[in-house]
Length: 107
Image 1 (cartoon, rainbow, N blue to C red):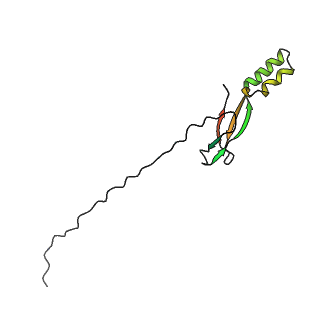
Image 2: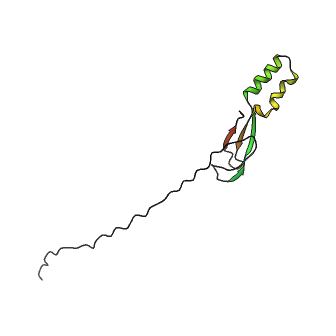
Image 3: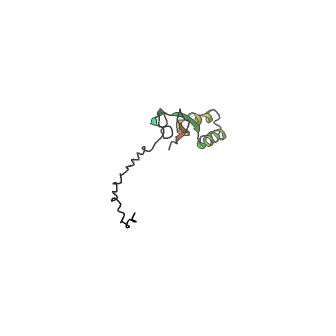
């Protein structure tokens, strides 16, 4: 047997596949503007359509007005600031995942 001559090894041409473009769509929820009453929104944490649970808390101004009314002799009227909505902040929570969604503070 004769040794074979070194033949040039040829490889098939490399065909490059076109890169597929991946499009990422980011949807942003409109800014949640809490109000004084429960609201229908989509929770940003659990992504469920919910009606927010609300919890009210008295602002510092209510305590100051109460003290001022008491000091000037209007003891009976000193509880009025605790009944006024303008002296309360309202916190909104998701009823499913309990995340805090925002707080309404009257201006």
